[in-house]
Image (cartoon, rainbow, N blue to C red; front, side):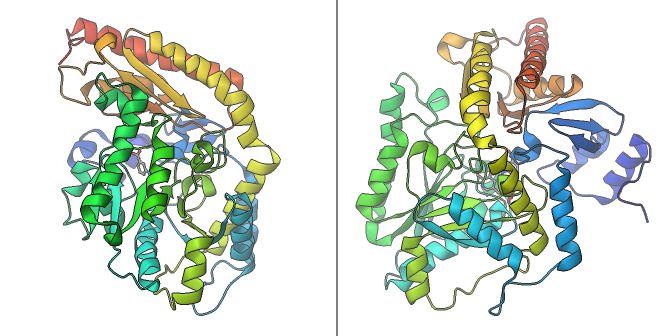
Length: 466
Ligand code: PXG
């Protein structure tokens, strides 16, 4: 048996990985031809691979390591908890100190009127919880026909059957026999890609009003909830026009529809506020949380439930017949508690808002002048660069969608940087603890990758609009 800290040569690790490990979101045949990149250790904002290369992680893992890598106090808190009580469940009228402490701490941080938390282990299972909870809420109020949940095209809510059904990723929805019934989708507020000549705020209103049109078509007496990410992450860091969220809030209020904000990426400081909902001034009934809740140190997710829903469930809901073995896992709660202590005591969220995000914004928006960049956009520590062969028209490339993004991503990796490609855009979601000098280093690496991509596209005659 191999040990977790095995130190075999990279090629041997890759061969063993190919033989026994199935990767998520991966074409196994393709990966196993070339071998997976092996990440061996990390500290701060940097990763090291098994060949000793140092890589700046501008994605914070998978949008989650908000406090950065190498936080010994989280490891210590988890070790202490593992020794005292490694596991106990929260079913059958039982609780334990770590889950009590964490639900209290999360309720303190959450917007006003959101005071209770249902825990799971990921964003996906939390959204499955939300799906069932929203329907159970209306059934408890004697309206069992209010079952329809409206989501958005190109949104990401996770990979479980419920979460894929809520999400709007076309390719995902084509695999595995989804969706579950009574889920509908409206279009996304993606001005760069879909707004054409419309003024962005006008476009934001149009896209928001699709919700109203859908509710009127389906009937408000049939619609349970609307679910959306305050800013779409996996869809390509899609920042809605300012007009969008206030109009969505108005529509949910007027038609008596629950608003579920999927805060899995936006939550815990990414926007410079504790939650994306706070950033946009919206008042959700339920918020999905995961990722930054523990900065990814251990798996944990859940739903922050507003008083409106929680009180009905308490008074009229009876047993909510739903839960996970690891709901409120003690070690994960200990990791999350220490992570939240760090975020609060080091004033990381305030520092993002006041210092880091303005600095990063200035540098990031300058990348908008690069000849390969059609648009640079950013909120907090959460940004995208749309690559384009022709800035003025926001044109797409003639090459298959994603070809140029992939090329740029490979140049990033080859030069010690992780940026993620979504279609032909490059996106970032770095740890919230960068220094200004690290931001400068990061921007330098990003420019290098853009320059290399641009040069290759020119040589290969690919700077051509579709
Ligand atoms: N909601 C949102 C908004 C997310 O971004 C989930 C739910 C699901 O969370 P879990 O913990 O079940 O993964 C996510 C996750 C990508 C990528 O490639 C993004 C996510 C997950 C995997 C890949 O951008 N986001």
